[in-house]
Length: 450
Image (cartoon, rainbow, N blue to C red; front, side, top):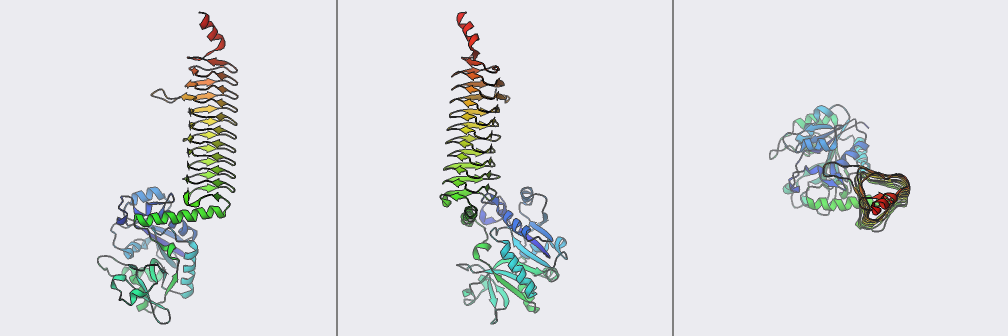
């Protein structure tokens, strides 16, 4: 597409009452400006520039260095903001589209329709308009008897008759590139600011065609305070949830299901109420998640069950079941068929295929083989007050209830520990140890005779 795009994101957003730049406030787990950037990228522009100002360094850190940034050192209005992008954009495409970083609901379909209309009309300027329930505070679109756009009048300057007009300006505009830049330089300030919408009056005065395309009000909603942000969060969550339901995911109660925009979910997965899926989380097919579950930055395979648990930075292979009231922390990796029961906690540990950890246990910095049984109350004592140490448990081991594994320690294949054992040294394969400190049956017998 013969198109340049400039996104305005320089304002602080004082009504947010926040030190965080307005456009970085999260919406469904993603900075609101990221939605606008994604839509703009879908239009495949020749060049795309982001105008930054307040919190410019923070914006660059969050959004990365693949974007062309333009800094507006003084916030002197929308016209002044677009002018900062002249060196990057002028002459590189026939059309310039101006978007805003606080309108995350705009769709590429609406913008494509607007751009097509702009081209068909041969317009110098095209406005994206909408009809809000309450137009108070918005600039009204003035048309003549034929419907041709003749200008924009701001609410405070409008007559009582003009205030009855329902069609208002969204702020999103596109321009003929060759017409825009020289006229932008000639804008005169009002109240110390340069307004992009003043170009409409200039175009009309020159006999240029000013076109308009109407959009749905929800798409052009700007988010400039916490009340609007909360409403937008609910709307975005509804959009995300409906998308997943149409893709084959069951949400038993969409109103109490919280899915961030970055999450991926497989077909035939069922999500129960009060479940939160966040960050870089990928869920497989045929899973049952929740109720009362939080999963963040984790990978969950097919056929898994997670009930009333917290999973963060973890990997679960197929057919794993967790909970209720379990906690998988960063680095937990559960192989196919693993079971973790209630009040189990796992950190930076690998559990091999079909290993079972029933309840009330903690595994940290541990590597477990296949078919291991971890009895209730088992704890890996991995921290000595200065360093973390590893525990290795090989295949087919039976760990008795209340076993303390004092790392670093290794339990060999097929070995067993008795209930209450405190294992302070390696256990050879096939050996049975018990006691405090844990010893083999033969050793314990010798101690008794002495």
